[in-house]
Image (cartoon, rainbow, N blue to C red; front, side, top):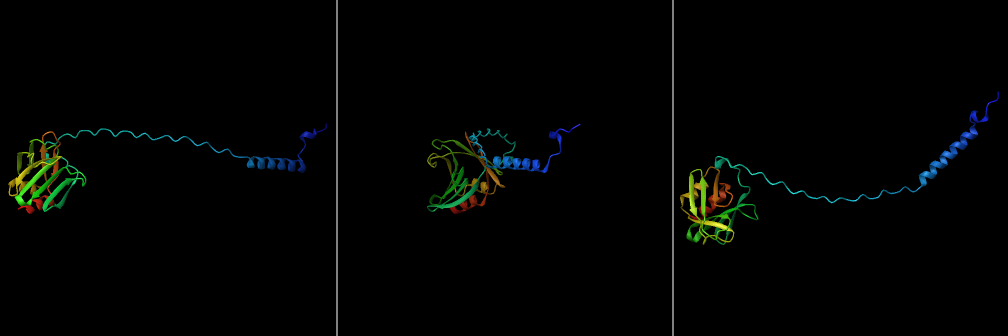
Length: 188
């Protein structure tokens, strides 16, 4: 019985031809232009609106309330002394010494075109004052106090904090820092 030549062992010559063909095919495919991937469209990020802040329940005692964010800044203004509370750009409250009249103007940001009650709470007690439209400048609700008024000392020594409450506005929980005492003493 004769063996079919197709099933005989491959010869070295056939292996060399096969290797050469495989090598040639690999070279041809390696040299072929590789298609560049198409750029994917960039999706514009749509900003989500910030969630509405949850209302903070009012504390049972004003001394437990969170301090209004900000810092006291002192400055001299045309011969007067002034302490402002809040961010440097837009203050929420201020004390201004009017040295000639020995008067301290306590003001809270708001519409001061008409007289409204302003309540000041300290660790010494509570006092409600009526704002003075004449002392109020645009954007401020103000009250005038004599530089010797005991309320000013109560604010200055109020165990770390005091509040200013104006009808229709959020209460201000303010720290009692040395800038306040400086304005008061500059007026005396």
